[in-house]
Length: 487
Ligand code: NAD
Image (cartoon, rainbow, N blue to C red; front, side):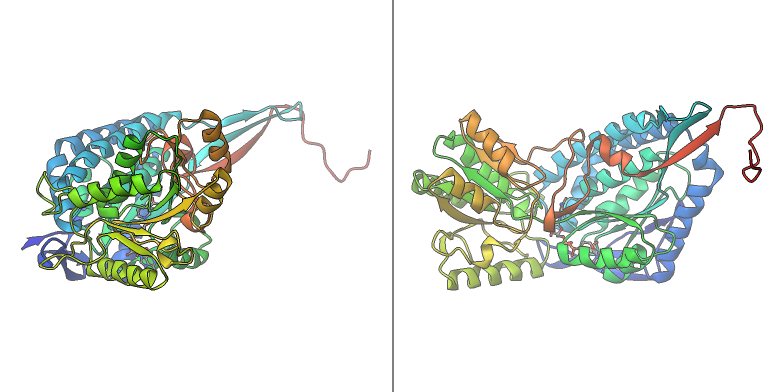
């Protein structure tokens, strides 16, 4: 049984309590994790605050912060196989994906390492002759970062990278469902040479999360997870009026017009919904398809979905692994049953795979005659694609926007003018045209509505971890006149 420790103030410790972590491919316990109780959370925040106001971090220049982040990136690259293996073991995400993703995670730290000394203030052309006014960009303070179980190394990099580049300190709470990769990441981080307390990594469930996000010493909460939890986070953060950035779920439309390159669109849709076993916030989970090509497209999708290799997540040949938890699988079964009751037709899949682990097959539901089916509005976070068809471009846009989410979207068409009309009309934070699921440290990522607010990735994300201080300096040597003497 493997044992993991939490990381507070530069020290590794067992924590006040321990809990078991399950391997989703077998449903059996494989490791024991520390569970942060209120006192642990409080110590972690205190360590982050001590580091924030401490001389060592305060005197670490922006360029030095950048070099530390670069060193961290190199260490991640060096330890990538171990990180990928642990993420696969604890979450069930297939090794093919965790290996590729961890290599790219290092690039996020490199990007923010390079940005650290480019976060500049400004000088203002103020309307007074004897004044100099400039803006300093200063770090926000202690950041509480909360991540869900899927892609934690990635979802934490887009928080830790810009926060440390800006000079903040961080308490990261890993998901209680699969904390192993983050606790191992803490061991790697420890070797990079940051002062103690700059990053603290704890884990635990809603209680630890609530204590952390309502803590009086937290300046900003960076959250990725579901909308329901986000509502708690916003209420918690009201305690301290901390700012928030919320990266939440989605019900992203994947729109295919009859002039699309069908081979590309099929490939992109297959990876758009079945990659990460559908456990991706940007999953293209609503196929919005032209009636002119619907039958052909669905036939090709069905054939591909049924040929997907389902298996052990640590096998490089596996294309779809298990869901992370039994609860995820139960949710998928429930939503499918209710959608079928309302007229949705199963094209393929739909039943849990028997045997050990939380396996679920690629599933396609045709909802063309069931516009109210819950599978069209609720996020599955599983390998389930819901299909709606359209006749006109206006209908396609209306269907695409018929959601309270607004994270990602995809448009497949050969028409440049139509692509531009769709880009303008779609209400989502990301529009991919003739591609899907592309990400980069250079591009902002985030959504609207129930998908949250704030952006991760890109320069703006680092600026969002700073606050602006306006400095006024009087340049005249004349004495300031007494304001109460009448002239
Ligand atoms: P979740 O909302 O249940 O949990 C996320 C995190 O919040 C966990 O660490 C959990 O312990 C913590 N938490 C739970 N209750 C809390 C509380 N009251 N106060 C503070 N923290 C609390 O999400 P999940 O089921 O782990 O993950 C799936 C969700 O995450 C999906 O909705 C998915 O779309 C979303 N997600 C979004 C993105 C994105 O970038 N937009 C990426 C990945 C996942």
